[in-house]
Image 1 (tube, rainbow, N blue to C red):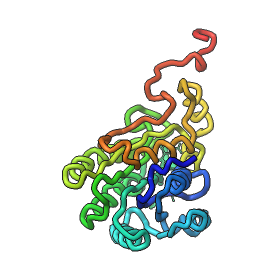
Image 2: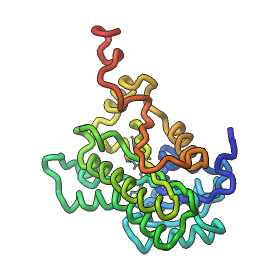
Image 3: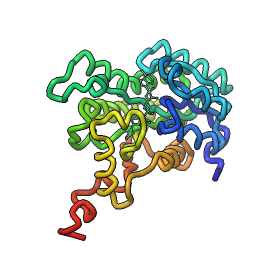
Length: 270
Ligand SMILES: NC(=O)c1ccc[n+]([C@@H]2O[C@H](COP(=O)([O-])OP(=O)(O)OC[C@H]3O[C@@H](n4cnc5c(N)ncnc54)[C@H](O)[C@@H]3O)[C@@H](O)[C@H]2O)c1
């Protein structure tokens, strides 16, 4: 169902890899709500993922950009403004990758070169895209930028490894840049802290299915699905949320406020 919440708005969506990706669902919902968008991902993801297919379906130009490359990001904003016919109103940062997790290195045995790459891809990329947009004056006043995070930024989840530091840094950048971009251009920057979701990045976490079930049982509403994340993200891009900025917003069925749940301890409490 469409409420035309994003009618006439132009957006850039980072990080749709396949139809499980959170960014994929967000892209579909944005277009359904009347936006025109460009889609972007790392060159390697364009070769192996299904982004071209989504671009055809949504009539969206697909532009390759490694989110760690300032040059690629400058090109992305230039090409997006040309393709969409003006400045950008919203951006989704949906990028995460841990080299140490991928190579199965434990948190107590991290390879620091890989960790720096992880932080660059998963967190500094937000600063880079914001700095590029800021210097190019590429985002309209009252524009909205959303990045996706997880509760491991605040609480310890051993399986999450170095991604915990990535998310803590990501959230800090959203606040710090949120000040500068807000004061200068009224652009707002927020982070949505999402439930565990079955995607390529999610499944990289050790024993992800057990982790998913635990959160699902803990949260009174259950885990928030990707489609609901897309709905929420659309409201954050819309004019209905104009005074929310520099926030980490928990979209997790209540998981982040729980201490203990009857469904985890049925004999004691149920
Ligand atoms: N799946 C979950 O459980 C979950 C929960 C909370 C937050 N998140 C966050 O949501 C975001 C999206 O992840 P997802 O779960 O949809 O998985 P996903 O694997 O579909 O998306 C991750 C994306 O990051 C892209 N990427 C990696 N390196 C890049 C680079 N150098 N330049 C540009 N793009 C690059 C990948 O190509 C991929 O499209 C991530 O930030 C992730 O940490 C996921």
